Length: 277
Image (cartoon, rainbow, N blue to C red; front, side, top):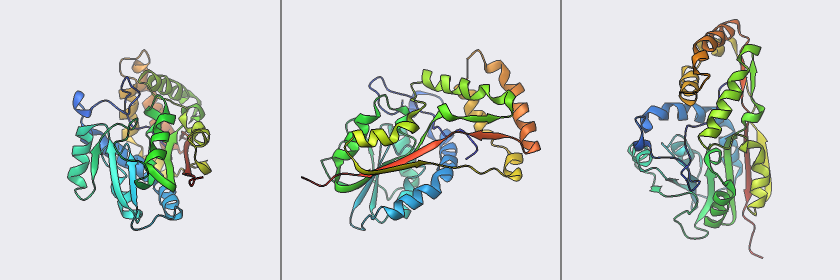
């Protein structure tokens, strides 16, 4: 992974997932390509975890925070279970439903999932907890709606506290972006907390890890325009915005030299709902 992995979302005052896409001038289509790029970065670990989860063809899988459906279709394809999606944003759901008419998508709050106890065999999220004021509430809700013995997975959550930028002149970018995300309400170091959060939510057999990264001269030279688009949006109106043209040019030169390193640790973790006592 050579780019910053957050999806641009904002808290609601209650700590919910995001503000409505329809409330601003950037709709779900604007962000979907970026989300799909992120989905490609996490595809290998996602497919490996799903393959090892032991899900049944008769079970049901819920993606909490399905957004524009960036991974929802992949989940439906990779998992034997029937896939469902939930997002707080009706505009995002409408966008996703157009592309995924066969998948049930529900508009609802991750803090109060609108499902009965134990109705899903598996429950997953992807770049969601970054935007939740109290992630433990969401994980406990995911546990509540997952059957005993069922599987819960956080498929990707970033940790900006471990960001690496090279060459040296590009190091400030990570600090600026992390501060901008915190102003938006993001929990920028949520990745390192996943193992503890899953344990605190009452899950057992908890495992986790961090995604690696690979750089090649051809990929570096090609660049990633969405990276700078996202960075400019995050830093819009900040006192550092005036330096972005200069730093983008430094980034371009480093990519052409094959020396650019940009790495944000992205964690995953999963566990099981314990059986009844």
